[in-house]
Structure formats: C-alpha cells, structure tokens
Image (cartoon, rainbow, N blue to C red; front, side, top):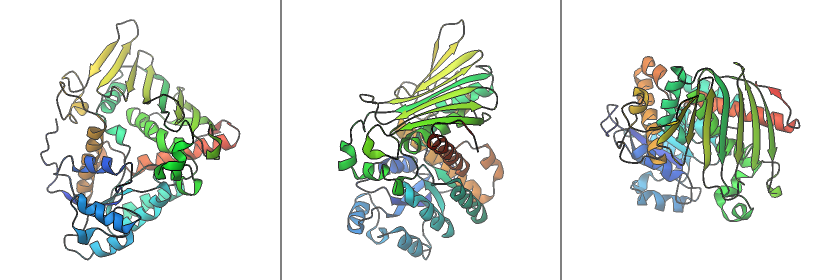
Length: 392
C-alpha cells in the first residue's frame, strides 16, 4: 500500500512545458506528480505560449516569478546555470512540438515525461530512444489510465493462466463530446487536435486509443500483432483527413483476434472506455466508469466482481493501493501511480540500478514508440482503403 512515504532519497526538481491556465491536461500532470510530495517538486515552468499569462499562472501555482519562463529554450538555458536547477520536465503541449522539446530537454541533461502520442513517426522515437540511452535519462509517456491498479491485476491473472489461452481482445475508447463541429470552433485544444500539421497523422487513434492499446500491451506483454486492418472516418467532414471515428481489426501471432473501436462522435456517451480479454477458460473485463472493479467470468461458474484493495488480489496490484477498499480511487490516483513510477525509474537510472528498471512496469520510451508504430500501421491500412497490412 502507498501512504506517501518516500521511495527515493529526495524529490526531483521538476518543471513543466505547457499545462497552463487554458490547458486541458496540465492539472492532471500536477496532481499526479505532486500527489506524493516525496517524488517531485514543481520549481519552474514555461507554462504558456503567452509569456505574461504563463508567468501569472506559474506564480498562482506557487512557482517563483523568476523561474516562470517565456519559453522552454530559455528555461533550459537558465536552469542549467543554477546549482538547484531542474532535473526533470513534463511536456504538456500539442503533439507537433513533442519531438523538438523532448530532444532539447535530453540534450540539457533532463529526464522527460511527455504527453501522448509521443511523436509523429517511429523514426523520431528511435532517435529519441538512442539519445535518452546516450544521456542516461528516462523518457516516460503519460498513458494516465494505465496507472489504474486493476491493470496489474489483469496482467497477473493472464500470466498465471487464470483465463487460459487468450483468444479474443475487445477494446473500446469512445465519447460523444465532438459529435458536432461546435467544439472545433470554440476550443483551442480541440482546434489543434484536428489540424494535421499540429496533431499529426491521426486524431482519435492517437488521442484516445493509444491509451487503450498500451493498456492492452501492459495486460498482455507477450501478445504481438501480426497484421491489422483499420477503417477510419471523418464523420464531421470538416475534420478530414483526420478521423473522428475508427475501427481496427487485429490478428495476433498466437492466433488470437482483436477489435478496437475509437470515436469522439459517440453521441450521448460519457465514458466508453472498456477492455475485455477472452481466454479459453474465462474472461476479464474492465470499464473506466467503474475503475475499482474487475469482472472475472469463468465458463460454467457464476460471474465474479473483484474489488480494488481486497486481500485476494495479486501483490503487484495491492502495491499501488492508496485509500483502502471502503473508498473509491480514480484517474487522479492512476496518474499519481505512474508519476511515482517515473520518479523511481529516474532515480534508478541515476544510480545505475538496472534491476529496478527491468522489473518496473510503467509507460516508458518503448511504450511510446510502440504506440506510434501502432498508429503508423493503422494509418497505412486506412489510407490503402481499409486493407489488411502486415504489422511493421
């Protein structure tokens, strides 16, 4: 169980690029990183493309005015001069800026936590992976939902053979908040998400379903895709060529089949984030609206609902427990879990502790790279007329 005691010698001096007053995701980063105040301390930031607004925001979240910078380049240049300069940075900016900021941060000697999708291409991710290895730094990716401890319970049950051989993988991440083009016109965050120059080659495949794809890989680390078919649509035509709805069929190397539906035009849907893994003996199902529960259905037996924090769960799951079974945990706790693991990974990297790094389950540079690979294959299939493609 986690109770706020320190996991590392001291918290990392931490900064943010982006994530200011008008950002949709910045608060999630801060609540995640600062939940365990033994992991990170926010000491600097380049919070906004508008430096005046960014400085005002930074001061209002407790950052010294002198360390609220107009842009990330200035911040990296100035902070490296300080004895108490930043050691890690989180990047909460539009997709098209991730590569250049991550590269600059690594070259400045910083550990990095970056929003997803990590970059536009696998080639960029490979380059950054090599740079991170050269610099001895960690690059983490904020697949925030993956910090939900029931993901580790599912992983343990798969590894222990509790559901038998995996046959079917059913994934869904949908909502209805973009069912019309209204948000595209009034929301700054939504405007860039449907601009290929900023968002990259996809909208909902990258913005939503990379979360779910990584979670499926976390649960089933030995399941590899052999080929897939992606059919994507711009239901709201003004979003073309980017999709606001997509279906992906997947064949796995072990013979299993999978299906994913992702959409931001699922009108009326508040939370369509589900994962179902079907095996030869039983099935597991998790739904984000009930994140503290895991459905376990054994063929021929009554269905069971496993509850977070109960002693019958696997030790790997219970290790991330925070509040006890009588109280509900949610997305903020999931973000706190992955940020704590980012800190443990950074500390282990600094100390050369490869054993800790090998056994730590968290969304690292490889997870980000595989998410990009999955998107690239989906786009390649869709652009070929929804054709089956070998997974490359």
